[in-house]
Amino acid sequence: MLSERSHSDRGAVTSNGMSYDIISIGSATRDVLLGVEDAKNVTSQDFPSGQALCLDLGGKVEIKKIVTTSGGGGTNTAVTFARQGLTTACIGVVGNDSNGEDVIKELQREGIDTQYFSKHSDDQTAYSVILVHPGGERTILSYKGEGQHFEVSQIPFEELDTKWLFLNSLGGHFEILEKAVTWASGKGIQIATNPGTKELQHGLEKLRPLLQNCAIVSMNQEEAGQLAGIDISQEDEIFKFMDEIVGGIFVMTKGPQGVVVSDGTQRYHAGVPDSPVVERTGAGDAFISAFVAEYMRSGDISKAIQLATANSSSVVTQYGAKAGILKAGDTGPWPLVEVSIQ
Image (cartoon, rainbow, N blue to C red; front, top):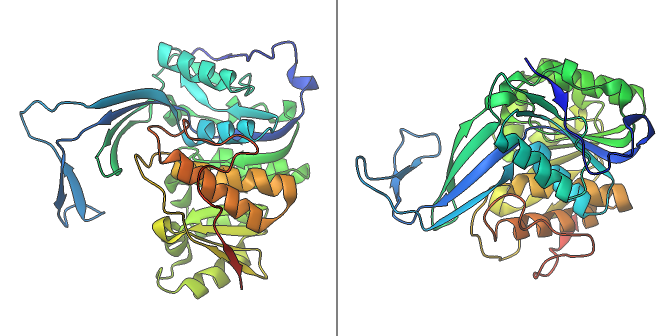
């Protein structure tokens, strides 16, 4: 297996001399988004969502739009951090292939330090084909590729210097999550996390001691309910439970119903603006990364919710997870959402 570091344009700055505002560790993919206008929505209980995206078997389906970009929670959040003016590094793994090179170059164009990325030749860069329905919903065909082989030994924690650490989807590699939280908390580094489905599958017993060390934890409503073992209709009980196991702020996103955030004392509620939806890929990454960026800057939860909502609302107006990400000082074309505190 070949392992090498891919260096950013800031090559004159060594790892020993670079201190970051935030480092994002997570997945990195090559995404191809296909606009499929002839797809049909079919209601069926054979699928977890209760709906299916159907195409003509044996037929030829015309693609109306195609967009190629990078994706993955690690790279998506890193771009928000960088565009918000934070000195940012991103750590992940790609294959020793052209898709991996494209992912790295795209991050470098955003001013993100990629020197800690691993590049391997034993598999291909993770790859997703995203079929986009005209209504904005999408079905993702995902090949995990090198993401399956992301190992804790690939991350040189002893070389890293940062104020904040952001942990996104890690492909279910619990040893990375555990090592990252232990390392960061031992150094007084603030930790924010939006754990992926595979991380949450490790269960409450393994996750509880790690979540206690996090300054910000984000999950969607279904994930929070499943982890707590509480029906999502019992929102008050979910928050009482999460306030006990999360050391800092708990963010629960509720899709079109907005978001509720708890700091352990107060709960902050906000809806979503009435903005057009072209394609939803990356909306969750856009939300939590902007929340973290603003909270790092101001420590104000209400402002963090407003920027997060604006960022995710902007992202869904364009194809891909990064095109609509806002830059510092920009809040998009919609009024900022109102935040109520209880």
